[in-house]
Image 1 (tube, rainbow, N blue to C red):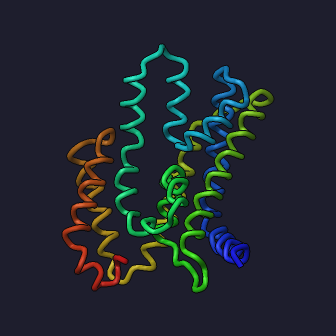
Image 2: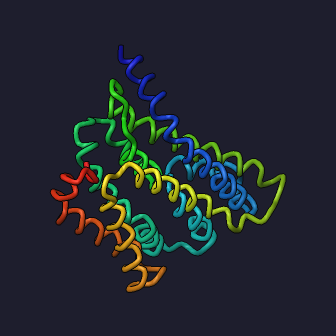
Length: 235
């Protein structure tokens, strides 16, 4: 019985992770090659993808490992890069609250992509929500580890200019955003996100707008939660 529940959840989760697979394949291979040509053995990208699992942070990790030992600076840099996950965690409190020990892996494996899928996906009837969230996270993790490992192995054989490959992630988020936009009735939450992002970009600049944007969106969604729920844009 339990095996059938897991199998149904895996079958339901996989199609939602296909865009993530595409993005992670390009970026993960590029990251593995980048680490390899920077002088690290092929297993470094495999290990970092397993235990860190943070794409942006892992790219910065290369320069950190090549610089002098500075634990405080490294901690602050990692905190700034990954601070947005604090807001992701708040948004997923209700979804993950009753999932028991499974929560530990879901918290560790929460990325921009798994957050987007688990927040926006419509889980079919008869599919266990907890296992659905778990398999979305696990599949995304497996994609990233596999791509980084392949990149690390290829890095010693080939070299090419990887500039511009990071746009794959941008394109993937645009697709996820448009998919969510089509599901909304009034598009109020989409407008909140867009206007908050543009406003904070103008006020704080491209280097510092992300955290103020998250705070603004969180505040507006909290203040207008009931009207948004009545409009059907917030569940």
